Length: 251
Image 1 (cartoon, rainbow, N blue to C red):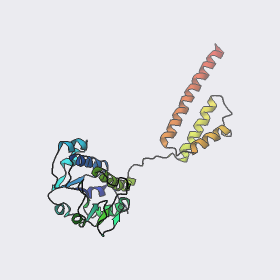
Image 2: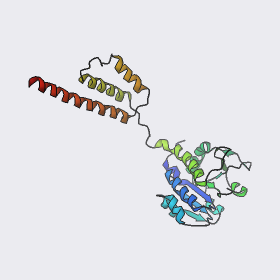
Image 3: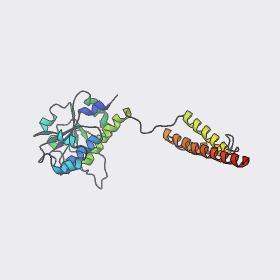
Image 4: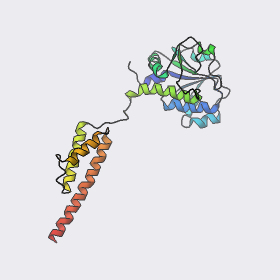
């Protein structure tokens, strides 16, 4: 399946009766971090609370544009897929790992809005609310402390969605090509030889050792650029040294 950033426009994060303003602000920041812009608040006891705005920090626009509804049915009436989140597996509907559910969520979002529901901080979603969902998600967590904070749960699921979309983004790792590496080794050899150390040629064990060292790491283009810069400084030093020696020899 091909996915792209436009899929995120149809992802709605729905908070059912949130109780802590700071959590709502943290959720706003989390979803914006992950490229999601739609936040729906179902029957919140507060609206535009200062603590929510403080925790949003740079994501106040998500709060300003949040849709506020009086019922869950109203919030999801246009959704082509409704996804529930819970750590208590109380219904017969199969629960999925967020990583496994992501592609179905994104595929459905190409057809229309997808609502992902998060329940109250103290008791989550009710059985009646979960019965409105076609998919159930449970976030794997330690038995010692299985319950996640609301904003943490949103971030985990939003991250799984975004990380599925992100292969279309600029890669974080920019690997050096074989040609880049060979140019780097040539520059190293030439720079070392300008120091008068001709034993550091390509057949010497020292150059072979350098190849072995660099081959142990996945070098990026910026790493190769750093080596070229180092060689450039060696070249400058060698030129100054030769000029001084020539001056002394003719003085």
